[in-house]
Each structure stands twice: as structure tokens, then as C-alpha cells.
Amino acid sequence: MVAGLDEKLEPIYQDVLRRNPGETEFHQAVREVLETLGPVLVKYPELADQKIIQRICEPERQIIFRVPWQDDRGQIQINRAFRVEFNSALGPFKGGMRFHPSVYLGIIKFLGFEQIFKNALTGLPIGGGKGGSDFDPKGKSDSEIMRFCQSLMTELYRHIGEHTDVPAGDIGVGQREIGYLFGQYKRITNRYESGVFTGKGLSWGGSRARTEATGYGTIFFLEEMLKVRGESIEGKTCIVSGSGNVAIYAIEKAMAMGARVIACSDSNGVVVDQDGIDLDLLKQIKEIERRRLTSYVQEKTSATYLEDGCIWNIPCQVALPCATQNELTAKDAQCLIKNGCIAVAEGANMPTTPEGIRVLLEAGIPFGPGKAANAGGVATSALEMQQNASRDSWSFEHTEQRLQQIMVNIHRHCYETSEEFDAQGNYVVGANIAGFLKVGQAMAALGLV
Ligand code: NDP
Image (tube, rainbow, N blue to C red; front, top):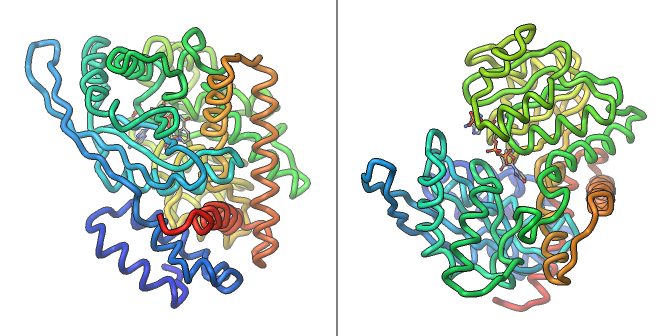
């Protein structure tokens, strides 16, 4: 079942399909936003006159380039990299770099498009962008990763800068990769420009709590959604897909707030541990040793591993998709509801399919869309930029407090916007409209640029 679009928006969407053939994830992200904007054009007709939606759907600039590098056997390898600078009405382009074999222009554009609204919701001065490469970091040595990052930056450096475009991490890009990228940028430009990258290490310009921020922020958002219903995360049984940066710190904060997290996953399978996931063991395996999740059950034999299993079949009260796009379908949503799930918050970007979202919303399940629920990562990146600009370094407690306050504000803003547009408690409507209005009004004020 696909919801209809407002008659003013249908031709805009058709134009997006025509101009961007084959980019299915980008089409999906645009459609999800357009489905909620009909009432906005009635209330703010000047935004339609100014063609703000058509302009927002077209990136300001898109860069595609070759990344040649040599592997450890001396063989030449060629990858393709992207940087899509989507919208700079509110500040420099800002968004992570993703290294994954599935990356192509449509993925980077969906992520960049989402990023515009997410960044607007943080209330901080950052525009939207995204980048990445079809490079697969799995199984690569440290020196291969370094050579690849250096080659990529040899082209990318000319397009980025602390006032222009500020990349960060995403799937396959953590502190190690950011170190290599930043190191090469510094070498080529002969400038120690800390603000050009976020997600840096603490000893070279990073912010405390940035590593934790996306996962922690998702749990803060979830707690606000539950509060509206007179509930709390304390004592709830949770499942978290993925076992990367977002998943690990969502698990950490959920546990710290009294939840029982019994499952997590990677692209090969699911670990179920009814004692509660052993976080120290998980961090050791994923962050330090960079091993697969199968190692978890080798170390903790009471846990079970479901090869190719679907995490959403495991009964829980709270589901947190924190791995990748379109990982939670309508069938999965029905299964969650049948098993007693009362809330879903997205740590990943667009992990729930449009049909999955519809099933959850129709069942009245509080659903936190990624562009609101996972905005804590980029918000803390903007706090890292603030610290870099003032050559300061804040404590963990102070940074976490700022993060929590930002998530509370995002939740309130989305909730109030959903009420204003007669969709009380629908955070998809609230997040899309609140983010769109902030960017759209800035674009209108800046003239036809
Ligand atoms: P990581 O690379 O640290 O971890 C990704 C996790 O997701 C891994 O467990 C990985 O398993 C799994 N995964 C990735 N691709 C797939 C796939 N195609 N199918 C099944 N599992 C998959 O990435 P992050 O934790 O940083 O990012 C996770 C999600 O959160 C992404 O959607 C990202 O865009 C989003 N996000 C991240 C932010 C951040 O600050 N890092 C900020 C906001 C959103 P495997 O190892 O097997 O590939």
C-alpha cells in the first residue's frame, strides 16, 4: 500500500524519478518527506511559489571520482567515491562518509537528503551532505585502509573545509579511517584545520561523547517518546540490530537506564543472550579485535547464534534498528507488534521500509524516525566544531548534558509540530515538517541561490 501524494507534490516527485533514474533509495527518502508536506504548502504558499521543494530535491553539488590504490600484494585496485553537497542554507555541508560495497550515488543521495532535515532539527548551524565509496573495508589490512584513505583524500581535499563541507564517519568509517583521512588533508593543505572533520580522536581535536552520541541520543529520544505515554525504558526488554558504533552505544545507554538488551546482530546473523548482552565482550570483539559476531558465542557459550536469522522475530518490548537501510519490513513490524513491542526508535538511517512504518503507525506504536532519533551524532559533531573553533575541550558530562538537552528539544519540536498539523504523536510528520520549515524558510530568505 502506497499513500497518495498531494496533487501539487505528485508532479514534483515524478520529476525526481525522471531526473534521477535507478536511485531507488533516494526516491524512497524523497517520497517519505513529500508524503507529509501537503498541509505545509497550504499554510505557507510562499514556499510553493519559491519552488523550495524542487530546489531542496536537487543537490547543490555532486562530486564523483576515481580512487586508485595498491593492495598488500601490489595489485592495483580502483574504487569510486562520492561527495554530495546537498544543502548549505543553514551552514556548511555536514554528513558522514560511508565505506561499503553497496554504495552508489542513490545511497549517498538518500543519506544526504535525510541529513538536510536531521541537521536542521538539531537547531545547530549545519547544512546537509554525505559521501562515501564502494570500497569494502572488511578483511583489509591497516595499511590497505590507510592507502585507500590517502588516495581518496588526494581528490576530496579540494572540495572540503571547515566553512565549506565537514565530513565525519558512517558505516565502515570510524576513528581509524578519520585519522588517515584527516592526516592526508593536513599534509596536502599544510593546515591544522581541526574543524574540517568530526569524529576525530580525543588527542587530535575530537570531542568527548562523540563516539557514544548517536546511540545515546537514540535512547534519549526513545525515553521522551515513552514518557509521553507514561512509560519508561527502565525494565524493558530491548533488541538492537547491528553491532557497530550506533548499536554498541545504544545498548550501553539502554542498559545504563535499566533496560535488558537481549539481542544484537551483524550482516551474517543474530546473537541472542537472555542474560543480557555482555557489553564488555561485545566491545572487545567489535571495537578492539574487529572480529565477527560469531566470536561472541564462542566466548559466551550460553548465548545462541542464529545464522542468517531475523532479529525482529525475537520477542521484545522495544526495537532499535541500528544497522542499515530497509532492514525492518512490514512483515517484521507485524511480528514485533504480535510479540508485544511498544516502541521503535531508529538509530540507523531509514532502516524501516515505508510499508513497515505504516504498519507501526497504524498500530499506534510510538515510532522515532532516524532523522530525529539518531540526530544526536551529528549534533555532537556540531559541538565538536564549536570546541575546535574556540580551541576548547569540554568534559564528558558537559557534552553529554548538551546532547541530552538537544534530544529533548528535538523530541518536543517534533511532537509540537505533529500536533500543529493534526497528527499528534506522529513523529514522521513532526520531524519532516519541522526540519523542512527551518531549511525552507532559510532558503527563501537567502534568495534564488
Ligand atoms: P558501523 O559500520 O559501525 O556498523 C554497522 C553495523 O550494521 C554492523 O554491525 C554491520 O554488520 C551492520 N550492517 C551494515 N550494513 C549491513 C547490511 N547491508 N545488512 C546487515 N547489516 C549491516 O556503522 P554505524 O554504526 O556508524 O552506522 C549504523 C547506521 O547508523 C547506519 O545507517 C548509519 O547511516 C547510521 N548513523 C550513524 C551515525 C554515526 O554517528 N555513526 C549517525 C547517524 C546515523 P557487518 O559488520 O556484518 O557489516
